[in-house]
Structures are given as C-alpha cells and as structure tokens.
Amino acid sequence: MQRNVFDQDHESFRKTLRAFIEAEVVPHYDEWFTAGIVPKELYGKLADLGLFGITVPEEYGGAGLETHKFTAIQYEETARAGVSFGGSGVHVLLALPYLMMLATEDQKQRYLPSFVTGEEMWALAMTEPSAGSDLAGMRTTAKRSADGSHYVLNGAKTFITGGVHADRVIIAARTSPPKDDDRRFGISLFAVDAHSPGYSVGRKLDKLGLKTSDTAELAFEDVKVPAEDLLGDEDEGFSYLGRNLPSERWGIAYGAYAQASAAVRFTQQYVEQRTVFGSTVASFQNTKFELAACKAEVDAAEAVADRALEALDAGELTAAEAASAKLFCTEVAHRVIDRCLQLHGGYGFINEYPIARLYADNRVNRIYGGTSEVMKMIIAKDMGL
Image (cartoon, rainbow, N blue to C red; front, top):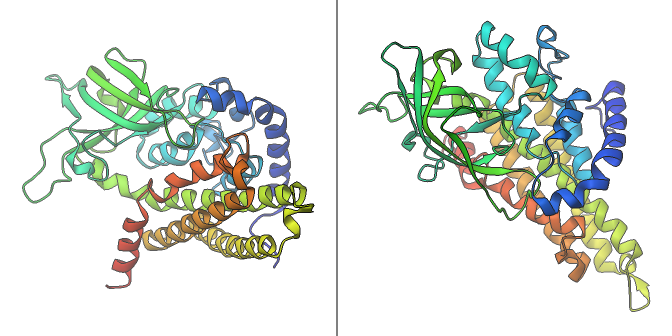
C-alpha cells in the first residue's frame, strides 16, 4: 500500500537527518549508552538542524510550520538507527506546547529564541516521589511573597526526563490548598530557572531502558521564582495539564510503531546472516512465519500512527483517539519486539545488539503518558461504558 503521509519536503528532511545520525550520533552512541547520557553539545547540533524550532513562529526564530510530521520522521530515523537524542524529545514534544499555549508575549520573547537555538534546554516536572499519577496529591509548594514580586518554591520531583541537562523546567506546584469539592484546584505552573539558588539536581536515575535519556530527581529549597515566570493563571495549572495529552500520547504511539518497525528490520538482517545447523536462520519456516506476522502487525500500527498524525495536524485528534492509538501501537511494539528478540537467540540478550536495547527502551511505553490500563478506561468511557 502506498503511504501518502509525507511529501517531498519531508523526505528531503529525512535524508538530511539520516545523514546527520550516521555521521554525528552512531559513531559515538555506544560511549553515550555506557555513560547513561548524551553530551549537551548534541543539543546544539540538533538546534542547528532546526529540530527545535520547526513549530515555533518565525518572529521567535523558528520555522513556523504547524505540523508534527517532521517529529514523526525523527522517531522513525532514530529508531531505524537504534539511537536516541537523549532528553531533547521532552524539550520539543512536552515543554514547547505549554509555552505556546500559556506564555504571554513578553514570556515568548524571553523564552523562545534561546529555546530554538538550544541555549536553554527545557524539561517538565510534574511527578513526585509520593504523587505519580495522582498529581492532585503533589506536595511541592510555591508561596507568593508579601510584595507579590516572586514565589518561594519548596519540594521535590522525580522521574524528570531531561532533568540533568535542563536549563529551565516547567514545574507544577501548589499555590493554594485544594478545595473540599475540588482536589485539583490550587496548582500552578512555573518556568523555573534551573540555575537558581536552592535548586538542585539529585541522582541521575539508573533506568531499565532509555539509557541515554537523562532522568533525574530534583529538589527545591527556598527557590525564588520571579512572578513573571508564572505560566497561565495562578491555581489553574491542573486544567492545563490535560490539554497536551493527545499530542503526548500520539508521540508515544508513533515512537512505539517506529521501534517495532526497526525491530523487524534489525531481525531480518540478523537471521539472514546467522547460520545454525548449516543453514541461515532465515531459511527456517518458523522464522519466516514469525517475521511475516510481525510485519503484518507493524503495517497495522503504521496505519494507526499515520491516521493519528493526520488528525493531530488537523486539530481533530480527541483524547479517546489518542488513547486508542497509544494502546494499540505500544501493545503491538511489545509483542513484535519480544518475538524479534527471540529470533536473535542468546545474542538478543546482549546490549551490543540493538534489539536488546529496543526491548528495554520499549517497556516504558505502556507506562508513561498514562498506562495501558488508563488508556482502556479512557476508551471505555468514550464508548459510554
């Protein structure tokens, strides 16, 4: 079936990105994988490619394109090469929508030019040690000063992707107690300078997968946050948090599909070269049937991911549709990557092989952005069940 989601401009971008990955990322990736983090210099190179400013309006230094298709190509090309760009995905996919949605004109003038150039890398900090999915239970506080000039931030966050390299972090904190009939009231969002006194980065967490994507614990002790760094209205932060979920879940869905597609490619290459009992592994009927079944699932996931991409670009992707795409694509990727690893035999368990890294990286897709169980709840509710 012919795929029509990308045009010639997109394919030209793909060629440029693929060449960049082969020249600037692949030769160093094993070193980054061992270190558990990419060098911050990589972000400057990604900015030079224009990856951070694709959807940022031209007046702030971006390209002003209202599309997620270039991001989709990035998912496909990094998966194809078995690499990642560290925490830069949070910078663009998670932090930027909040800035575009909530920032005042003054804030956009202050934040976006350095966002586009990569001089300031951004992250998003919602989760706390005692408040994961239940964000209304967060304990981090931001108390307004008597003269109203600043807030004093105290508390801690965990599982913050990009937290080690971040220069600014969008932090959710309580500015007022919850109401008796509304636990979500009283949360506000702040664009916090990560170099402020009292702001500290704790452990870089040792994760099962996504090794090159730095994930950190953050702590705040009497951090002064200027009032002009409040994003949106005070106490209304919770209402903002859900608005970006469809695009976030689309991103996870698309990334999962891309990983599954890459797994089939890696595995076909492996079984065509690997010899067992005098024959290539690819020559056995079981191998052919397994890879054929995996390819069929990837084809279906591609169709779902592409349809969700078109709906997202058109502003029509609903919360339930995004949940459905995420559920389907992440579950497909789970099955496909597991079967592909099996075809590698013992070598599939060795991190030297990209299938092993894909297996570990893929596991979180059914957890973050909302678990598969939460996706089912959203879909069922939309069905009227």
